[in-house]
Image (tube, rainbow over the protein chains, first blue to last red):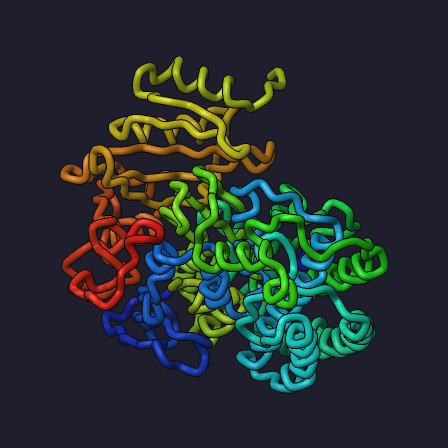
Length: 406
Length: 170
């Protein structure tokens, strides 16, 4: 079903009428509908937005400066806190950047394990965005039903790495330990459960008259404007551009899997919702393929200079102890170079621009956060719309304060 | 129009034929074509890369600053461009002395440059000429220094209980 079939007109294109009396309204920094700390100063004419200004930086934590004082493996916990709804993708993106600089080839098994974890976290990211969008439009039920599935994903993460939200998952060169049979069984069970849960969720929203009335034609952006504003990810695909880093520059063996790129047409809130829903189905497809074809082999690359040796070897073998000491104290050779590496994060192209001068710490590390870049379009997107539409638009863009503020 | 492969040689020759000595260097590192240009022509070069039908680098992926205190105390701006249909990425770099850190803004070409230039100004103090709203974005407005410049140490330099000289940059 496409949007054009619905052929539904909405009156949001009306130009605001300035009667000479405008109200200033602060939406945020701490407002239940902003889902994070950012402020929007709205100039309102009645209930319509005349102009707005976005203020960000409330949880800025100077990650780029911090990264200049940290060895490579200590930067992973920083990346957790960018888009904290899908931290494994951030972790893996950083590991792959470091691997690209050092020149590490990972075994197929590592690639597949990473793909499974990244797609699980993409589902976690999208399901939060979509269910919260429902809450903001007044439909609490879907959120309550589907949120149980996020717990299942976090249980899987917990069993893989020991943490739930800020995962710090994997290492440079591979994963810290192999998947146990119980993890694989849990993921298979999740695939079955989530298929049912997502069907239920879609039956609550997709053709719901009230939800469609609240979202179709709201907060739309054309493909040209979206590209000019640097949109990537589901928000760009909702506007009709089939750009996906997983397909254009396949990393971590993504080219082994068969999946589609869902796109929308109008770039409005409903399209963004639908694109995210469809992407969850595609993610389920990818996870199932990766699990079925999970290759045998080691769960890390053979790089003793960067990958910590197992603890029992550290206690009993001199070489392992030396490598352990060298890695922890940062006494390893890192090549000089300049690398840009990107992965498809929950919100779009998550890029890492790394300049290394051969020291133990990066000379400069810049995060290309997709949310930071497309948030600037918000002012244009909400101009002339109703206040309640502002909330829904903000929600459907999946703005994560941690990612915007770095 | 005949099909041409967008490789380093082609892009460099196209740029050199139009801008001559303003194109300082071109190389390819880790699979990314990197071209260093003179900052005085940055807007014209970006415009050319955007509008030329053979090049059409119409997507600004990333814009950021960098500070090299050695050897000449220079600031730089690094742009990452992307030609989406051909899937070719291009890195444009430009350097200028820290004492004269002014460069043309790209906001007339890319709306996405707005926040990214504000961020670069916020952290490096690079003035983007022609930017509609150049003020701090992530840091507080009354901050009186530019924190990502290398002279601002992350840790308090008066501390004597920590000695890192044996490791890294000290």
